[in-house]
Image 1 (cartoon, rainbow, N blue to C red):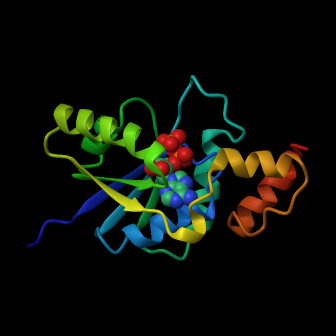
Image 2 (cartoon, rainbow, N blue to C red):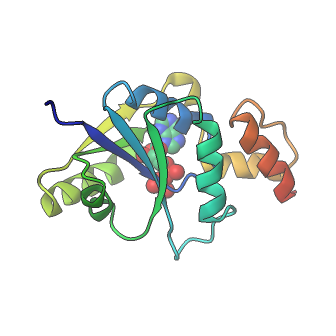
Image 3 (cartoon, rainbow, N blue to C red):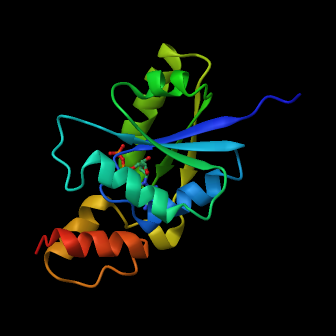
Length: 162
Ligand code: ADP
């Protein structure tokens, strides 16, 4: 029997944007099973708790059958190992992303040679989207409905960050 190809897509997703959703939808064509890993990073102070981020991703991906959402602590490679994944998916928006991502991908491969990182370049219409920019725009009361899934829009409204 052919071995199932498992990929992880790690990130903060604070909150998930349409840019992340685009990467998720495109990467499920490359793997049999995609595990979106929500990083529980104690050094950052996120707007949404890790549970809220897991729930918002579950809701936003509920129509996609081969996607699972999980939280994780610690190193991405350890999460990959635990999930039996040999592929890490990351998105690239600009050269500035590339420099950092290249270094992390090489370190991850060094730590765990069985894992490789696949980079998906952003779709042009999402190239300017990041969680932090979306939060900043929302803070000033601008309409962000074109930037995040509808359930995330509601959760952002509930946070009352203005
Ligand atoms: P991190 O805190 O690990 O950078 P993010 O939640 O900001 O996590 O992003 C997770 C991944 O999604 C990263 O690889 C990032 O480059 C990618 N990403 C974020 N926004 C976009 C976008 N608009 N288009 C393509 N990739 C994106």
